[in-house]
Length: 144
Ligand SMILES: Nc1ncnc2c1ncn2[C@@H]1O[C@H](COP(=O)(O)OP(=O)(O)O)[C@@H](O)[C@H]1O
Ligand SMILES: [Mg+2]
Image (cartoon, rainbow, N blue to C red; front, side, top):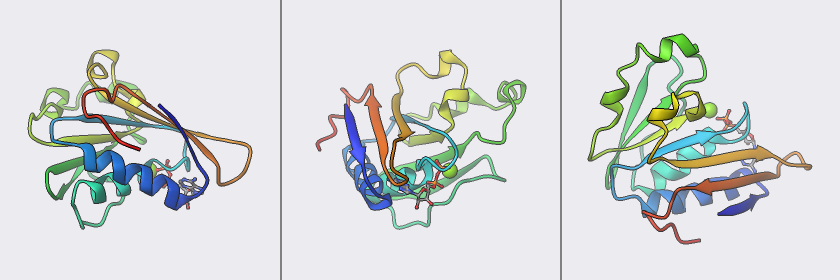
């Protein structure tokens, strides 16, 4: 599915709809360059999943956990180097009841990207425009 966002609040709203469709156990890879809007999207997703917790990138901690209708785990791989990825406990990411959202999820080894929902955010011509592509969401049936 391809969508256009024209503002930060559009992206938040798209995230909110994704979050509302989650039932737990989903792995969302948030993919896009610095400043694309991954954290804005994560904020919307957490809100849609019923969390009022403050969402910010877990830059100096490995992950943050938000409590809502379901529990959401937020990871940001921006500062991690490729070789360090293998020292993360990646299998622990696969906790069945939590939904997990991973900024820079495209840094994960391919074997850990399978069965995930990819949310790709790309810059577009205008400063505040973004192209958002959601791939692999057949299971959770997000309604827009
Ligand atoms: N359409 C848009 N969607 C999301 N963010 C936008 C948009 N237009 C402008 N912005 C701005 O871009 C920045 C995105 O920041 P952030 O979500 O932290 O990016 P990332 O986590 O991808 O590095 C914010 O300052 C936000 O206000
Ligand atoms: Mg971010």
